[in-house]
Image (cartoon, rainbow, N blue to C red; front, side):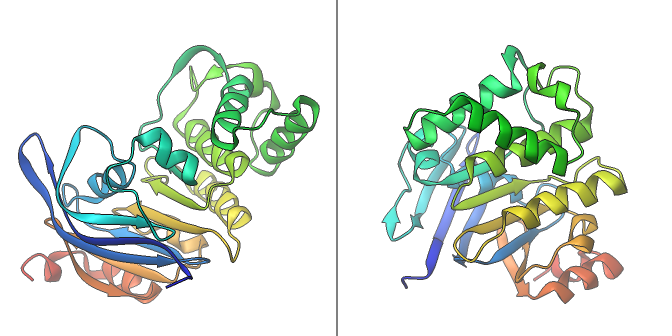
Length: 247
């Protein structure tokens, strides 16, 4: 379908010769926000890494289609240039490269267009204000000495600046206090349009308290065992995953 942005078909993935994903099917349309939830070790992060073709994960079967193009075996940087962004559960620290220079380099590499420096800095500054980020962080080394909350806000800042077609947010709410979660949720809402899509990966429901999502998928032992609307997340919050573990 023309409206489809991402389609995963019967995806099987191994990590260190152990099968982690055992036949995932998932379709995301433009303008939709999807959530993959599941207990630790169920394959959530593997799904995200498989979409970006992280070489640590081996696809043994299945296809990944992005905007009607098969990207299953493309290199990670090629996939990123197609318009897929992934925020990391544990963002890397990069000494010697400032937040501004990292964002400028990333923007240049994804758009393949020269960055207009003044306009770019104003855009970064505007988003940092919206995300309650210290403007002095612009010149600090990327994530070095940053708190957990600052690192996660940095990931959302990158998403807003790069403006991808599909944003994959892996455990963005992990380790954050209530105020930081609200700020991250605000950044996600700022990003959302009818033309882009979001895939949120999480094992709890904290971030969903401040977000409206279209579909929730429960991933257990490498398979999606249940799909529903936002009420499914509320049910899991109340009752946990036990009823889905033996499906």
